[in-house]
Amino acid sequence: LVVTDAGMPTISDPGFRLMRDAIAENLPTVVIPGPSAPTMAIALSGLPTDRFTFEGFSPRAQGARRTFYEKLRFEERTMVIFEAPHRLHESLIDAAAILGDSRKGAICREMTKTYEETIRGTLAELIVWASSREILGEITLVFAGVEEGSEIKSAHDAVTRVREYEAAGMDRKGAIATVADEFDLPKKIVYAAVVDANKMSR
Image 1 (cartoon, helix red, strand yellow):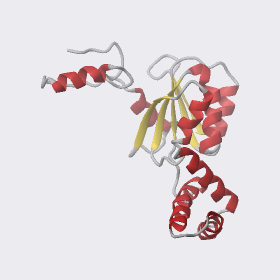
Image 2 (cartoon, one colour):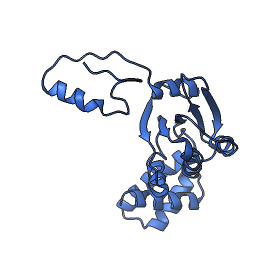
Image 3 (tube, one colour):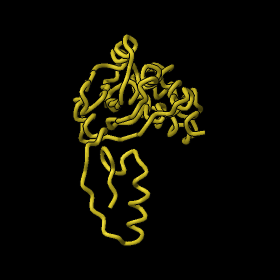
Image 4 (spheres, one colour):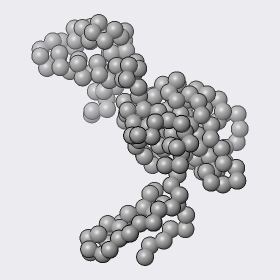
């Protein structure tokens, strides 16, 4: 019998190791769910719940945190992320710089507790909110996935097309110009997306 003092067993705690070992030993396993911050936050956010990804805590160091958000730039599912209250403002700034400051999101604070609150808005609006007060308590962030037709999604698809042209023998400059016309995007956007994609693949 494994019991947690709060929350859903094995979510953001090491309980999965016990479950893994129990399964390996063919022991009977039954789960009785408890409160779960990721599912509560996504419900409170007002963002799509049909597909979502839980990413745990964002990294503490800014460089690692920016890499963390870079990997989520083209994520189409709703994203759920834990954040420390003293890093919230900086984390939102990093997220906005990479995901776009018009991306929709929510800050869920102190869920199920006396001072529970949910703040919804664009990342730009959430940054303003977080900068104007002392942040305390447990924080769960929810960000919308990239939308079809958005410039970020179009740029991601454009990178794939550029690579197809390059594989066919076209030089990069020509491929970028051709794809920019195809996708009706500025060449500088396609170029930047290609550079970013190459950095991420190293």
